[in-house]
Length: 112
Length: 113
Image 1 (cartoon, rainbow over the protein chains, first blue to last red):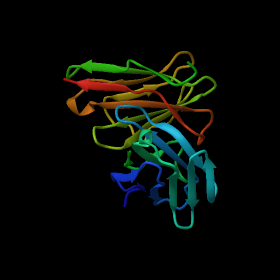
Image 2: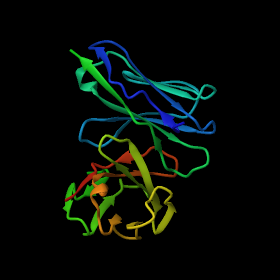
Image 3: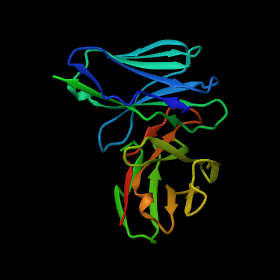
Image 4: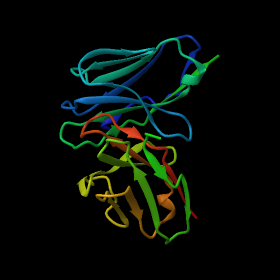
């Protein structure tokens, strides 16, 4: 079992729809969770982080964390073609240092 | 530019040569992380450093790879005797403290001929 798992996609949504990206993790003691966006050929860009159970909203983005289910998700409302990218879920594990463990990423395509 | 800086952005080496990748963290950040992204693969942690100390090198290959973050100057990731399999994008990230949010630099794309 991979430490952080994401559906590789592609996930295709029409412009204006809600895109839902999901991530599961295996280390029950994990404490910090991050979503990065990576355009092709570019570096990862931090878009959300969440530390506590529940929802965290920032503009069109909402991160949701359920530690009991070991599940974290990212919702993108009013999706735009410019949101088309790969979304990486990353986790700080319980026993390691500051290193991040990344999932393989989900490719999102927003069609006009 | 207050962001993480990396240079060079592109580096071409022949097999057997040495590659040196540099990273300057964001202003106010003293924690540096190196990650590698192989073609069509995810980001993999390599090493975590603070000034003059290697904190976690659990992701570093045992041979040919080394990293440092001296008291003065940028962090350096050094790859000796490069092989074709080292061709990848190498990203540096920095954070204000351990286990805080990490911000990535633009990366160095290494091509080994």
